[in-house]
Image 1 (cartoon, one colour):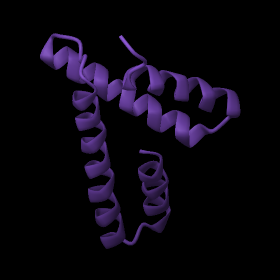
Image 2 (image 1 turned 90 degrees about the vertical axis):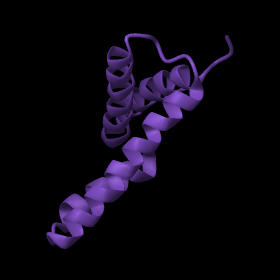
Image 3 (image 1 turned 180 degrees about the horizontal axis):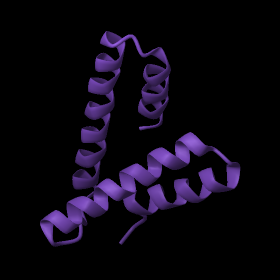
Length: 89
């Protein structure tokens, strides 16, 4: 199998760890955990990159919804954090 999205995520995680980029490292770990959770729920490995892209899209939607909720709650510190995570996704 060619280098897939899963391997790219793992490579990006290593790069973020070496570079000391805490936000990027955190977001990539969250995505990897979401992939593993989906695999546990499905009881099978996710082979297809489209499945993984679907999980990333779900994470993007969650960040967008959180940004809107934090804006309504006047929490600019959390809005900035969610926007940084969204940019990485």
